[in-house]
Image 1 (cartoon, rainbow, N blue to C red):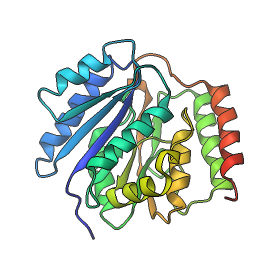
Image 2: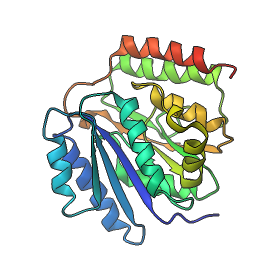
Image 3: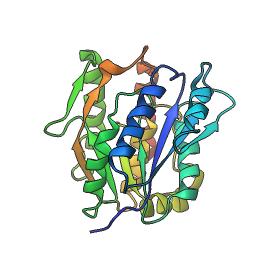
Image 4: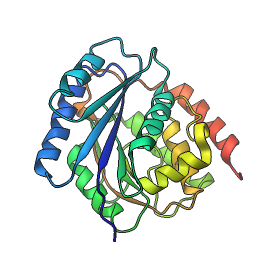
Length: 249
């Protein structure tokens, strides 16, 4: 059983001026409740047209927040690629990386549960909507069917023991796995530009022999400010491409 030294929290953000302050406050509260567990935050501003970068800069004055700016909106995959590359430079083998959505739908308090599960000897732990105790609050029936259907389809083509939720972005990665993935794949670790990148990352890390587990997640979509940024038809097409490119490799 290992003990994590430092947790780095990666937040890819695009036009999240309403949600980011609430999320950073909740992360700060998590840090205050767990003073013996140091953390830092990396915000990747993906070309936001609102005050997202200014908010991240303001919070950096009172909590460990580091801001990386894209010069335009390049998509979630590009933000994850930038963030993972930056994290790999500061996350040691005994540290961990947490990825979360920046729209305040993921509760930072769950980091403690993710961390405890990782410490059991896993390399990657997913906050899963589909484990017993998981739930989606405020998500439309159509979006629920789409998300559940995507995970079911991906599980058929890329079965990973113990995994039900292939697309949720709330995860914790062991530092040694992150370093191994970056060393193995380099810039090819994240080739998808959109929301399909989360499934891509999971599939590629599983191929490295990662031991994966899940803990239940209550997704609070009712706390999301503004409309979803997902283009469903485009995302469906990209899942087809992802499966075609990665199946039987």
